[in-house]
Image (spheres, helix red, strand yellow):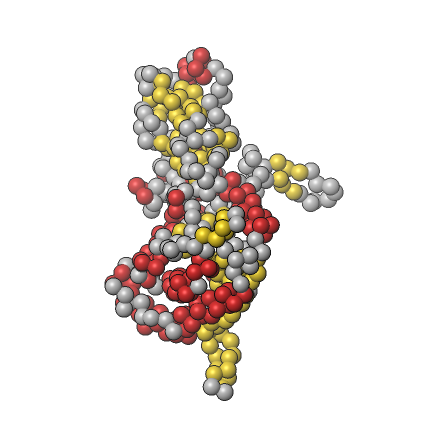
Length: 411
């Protein structure tokens, strides 16, 4: 019996996807629910499990193919469990399909790996035996990118590593003269999506940015005082981002227009607060959404942020978690940025940029003192948000940060 392998149904906001790499060759045995291929959308990388146990009879769509939801990309023969690759490739069902080459890192005897981990292992030329020795810390024991990186770091240094060969998708561009190599690399779907949305934002919105500075001393004192107790009671570390989320929600409640969006000639006022948090991942910047942030405690926010960060690195964020949002926060300060003008994430109308906290001399009560100071930047769509509302909302965030509530007072 032939079972069709289909691309999963994609969300309404995702029209197409790209097949990254088959983990099985035509003719190889597959087990039900075993990951057959990674599928990249413009938001996440999905794993496609085998719908049945049998032999991968035919690969209809090769690596790099563009597909849509519900499209058939392969077939599995459930009655040919003992067939050899040669026998299957010689059958009519697979006569038009070439076996897909795999690296040692993709061998079937290797443990289950996350896509980012598999790519890193391939780049480092790790063999199947070496990969099998890596203990996975991900879900169901899967090997994550961090596991591979830690393994490579712990390896004793030997002879200098040979330069990595460019992956098949990279086209070398001949140098014009001398040793000036170039490489042409196609954008991933995520990178292309980011590029398109940023251009859309700048070409359709009247973006303006207002700035302010925040004295972070009170928050630093609270964190120092409650850090250990908070972690012991809630099982999560007390970071800075949750304070900014709380401050943003307080300001958005005072100035609902900053939480609104534009739809044609209409303004949509959102009676809820879904805050997007920009997170770095191996594939690029992603913005998972904290739903109903106003109803969460600080511990609840910290848990979601920690979970988003981990699953972003593992490539496990879902399309639904990356869709929507009424306001966004991006923190360039973690990379050392002192000042920037963030770009709005459409159809939202504003975004808060956080920057590095540095000790600086400031005037207090006629005296010069040293305080941990942070610059805030609020970019907003001037089509619907006037300067008054933008400035006052940023001032409201500043005040909420300079006079924070104890994180342990919330139930």
